[in-house]
Length: 491
Image (cartoon, rainbow, N blue to C red; front, side, top):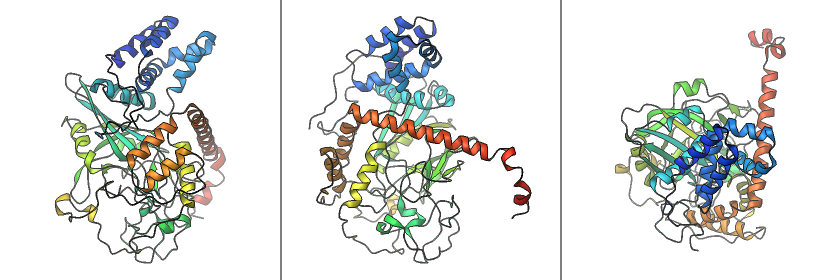
């Protein structure tokens, strides 16, 4: 297919255009400011229009809230659109592929324009610290764009739990003169993988990662019997059932500091002490062992700890037990830009969901489970050396590179409901990330899917608020005073 997105050059300064609109709104010239916004959006590609809306919605929150309270019918549609701009964004279709047929919405945008596309997401989805960090010269800010996936997903389409690089991690940088640049790691991962999950079972020799003691024998639960090569058990038993649960970062802003990771001690990031101290409910664990992180995970919300790093993954395995990982082909440039100022010792990391993920993946995983599984090439062995953890110079030759070593696609299950699902499954089975990403963006851009996705996220937001309110009530002094003596005695 040819690139379906507008690729004409544009001379718009997205930041400056948005600032003029924000200034008008803050000075009480609402009608004039909104007319200016429509003029600036006219003829621009969607990804630029969305960035303008996000900047304006984030920079003029109070003024726009006042207009909504005034219930001005002539501005209702624009105000609704600007309200939606603060919600989970649509992930821009971007790839570093040089193939002109691969969809890429950033084609022919300058570095500054591309920077504004992603910086506007930071402003819309991040906290005040992230907002301020974008305005510092000689400074870098990190952004993660998550598409929902099961922990059982793998790049070859099997449910063996080695992970999928279909998220984006972005480093945004202003140099000492304020010039804007960025690097988009379009092969990234923000979710743990089932290979580290306790629910994948134990033969009595599988080790707990923290204690290095063998886990008692345990049958694999549910779909986890497809995890053919489980690694050391990570996670924490959040719900008290005796089985450890993998966790992942919740969307939000996390302050990061420098760290080292892996056998080669490569540069990485980990949450700062301040982030941990203020990180209530910033981790969600998969307590119901369905491979997803939702409000169905009872007792799943926990405080942040500093083990949730950003580090390098493997060629064909994301190697995430809860960390954010980046494919080796994208990692070095990401870190070079992030660490460009050797004196920077704090990085704001904004992680957000995206609207191409919520509706898509539950259906896809259900359909995939109904498809026949390929016979696993290796037995369930725990004595296979972890070659990907070796430093690159010591790594044996012949390991498959991700995603070039692609198995043949299986027959698509007859239960597939539409052309999109067939394309997605076929691309997943053959390990074709570009085709899969193209199908996802094309499907996720449809207005009816966007509307459904928005409704789903509103429902999730309500459930989270209700869960938080319930927790506040049940842990208040009034509710707990009668139980405190018993708890103190260790009963």
